[in-house]
Image 1: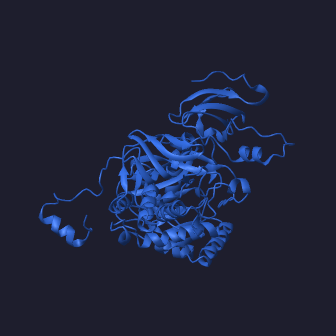
Image 2: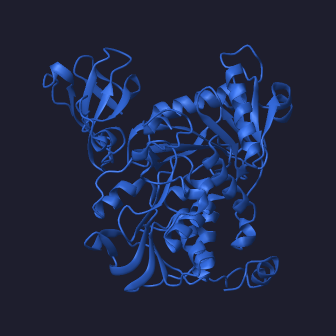
Image 3: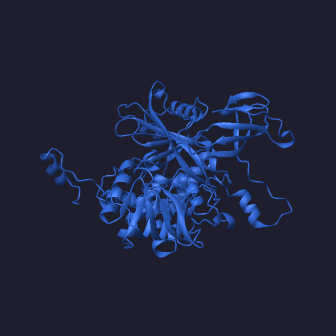
Length: 93
Length: 419
């Protein structure tokens, strides 16, 4: 499996560290609702098919990437930068 | 059907082994069952067997979307052990170990349970201390454990490199003598035959495509072989848990599906007569009865339903294997494959009633499903029959994540790939 980092180019997956499901959102720090924190920390959709996930390019630029990958075929359909640079990553196939 | 025995073997030998009866029937699904178990793997079949045998439930079906033994029960590295640290886990797996010890007789099927020991190697003084602690925890719960010195390990496993001039020298290890390996296919076939003899309908090539509900209560299933109504439905589908539960309307669970790879080399003369695990990376290796070395390591580390993995893990486990046994370096690999494991958020399983009325869940087995098969079957059967958990699975609830009662054996937190 190879992931095309928008900054460094196509590299082996072993250069990256898997962070996990990118669809879970951390609740606001002032949110005291236990259910929303529980969902954030523990509950996952775990889809069979397209999965949005975060990977960090730990062995190179250290960017956190938002990757859309199929969990059955391992085919990656898009890679984007996360954070303020979001949207600047190019389409990847 | 008659029992398997030396006599039946001899009798069939005289007729050229042409008159063996198939080990289980191939019934058409009926419209109604008292209990339907989804998933004809080791756990599902064992659950059906114990439901019929111990809890006297008649009218049980096991639905399997493929053929029996094609999932994780035929994809694991066959290791059976109970060397855990947390009391709830040691008790559960030690009970499983005791069932394993009598299993061939219990189900009249030779599961080839070979108690050849499982040895965890320690490479730092801290790790050796941790193993002493774990060994003591095991002894206190009635399991067996022995702490071995480097000299003793070197004497017992001649092929293992125990020199100290290496990055991760072996300082000692924790051995569980009663642990070992078993023949995994025999578990699927043996439990299938034993359950069938109790009257359980095992229905292969029958995929569940939807749940029939009355309000929230599960009352039956839509399958590729028709509609089946059931008073109770047990879900025991390992890596497919999230998908099957989605059909029931449960969108999220504290589970991620990951791929775990296993490897077999070409056959060798006897070299390793136990199971050895590397303590500084992750590798477990043993030798099958056919002579092939069977080994595996960590999950690949990302969500996957692919039943095949990538090369970095192979590189990692092969490197660890050669570090431990330098004489393996020129061996060729015969086979490798992947299984989809249901990694829970704390590394411990879930066997519980719910999360909907009429529904029961057995999931989250991570790497530990195979060795747990007899106890998981027994405890899940108890939970289904009595509508309350067995003492041994009372901690394996689904709501423990919300309540803060996780059983995090490794202390790695809610990151499934690290368990």
